[in-house]
Image 1 (cartoon, rainbow, N blue to C red):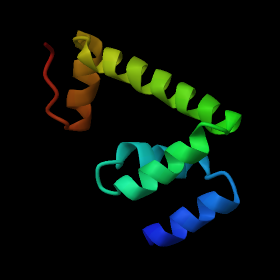
Image 2 (cartoon, rainbow, N blue to C red):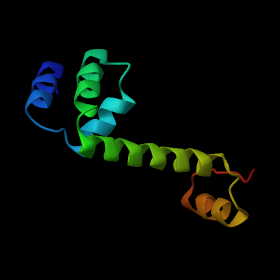
Image 3 (tube, rainbow, N blue to C red):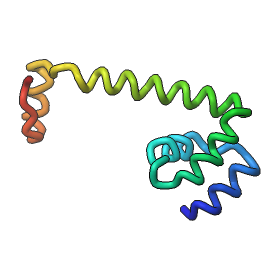
Length: 87
């Protein structure tokens, strides 16, 4: 999606949740779009709530991914042919 279109859209309404997540995950690719979102974010309680929730989600995901997998999960992954090994 053209970033100039996205910038104009923010000036009109709140971006969809999927768009917010993409902006946050790819902020380094489009700093202008990120800046426009930040300006919108400071006055939008909906976006503030979503960002808080998505941040919590990624914190939980990161913590779970750092845990060693159980033997049961490793066997299941092996049965799928993923080559996953137990830590």
